[in-house]
Image (tube, rainbow, N blue to C red; front, side, top):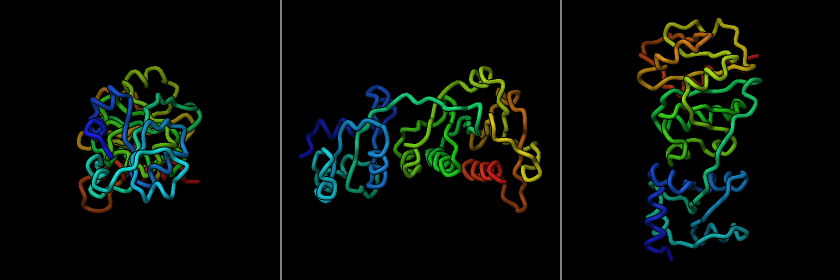
Length: 241
């Protein structure tokens, strides 16, 4: 039976303020929880229906009804299991030897989640987010990653400071006045792909740090590409042999 206090506590973690205060976040759904248990994240609590428990008898959890699970879920259709997980401080790995993705003020949870999933697909380990980008622990971000979150190193920082401290990196920036990416020779080693805000693009203060400007040319009449889609196109070009 789910107590009132448990319900109130879990629901509070839908808000960034309380996630930060408690150092916790929510993971929902069968696939996401499976990925969670394969990672090195520490699980605080698990709330699951009897059906999930029957198939996962080796996992300690709190049994709840479907109705109770729905009362603490952020999903329209709750999916058998919800876990409360401890946040951990992530660190970048080998930024000077590989391609890294950097996000400037990306605000949409779906975009961030899709970019994380895309980076995982292309074997990119590090994502550097500006301090004012959407919170990676936002439930909508996590759902959009489809489990890729657990394999990534994602940090938040002041990007001006980051670029100043890592001035040996080649910074590729997605800009409207950039060079046609399909005619550009790209180098992944010690490189950063900088993607800007959904509506405003890369911040003015970050432009001076860009060493190579890139453009995805348009062949139709659409005004722009979604930032997650643009990131996927550019990552693909970096991996072209």
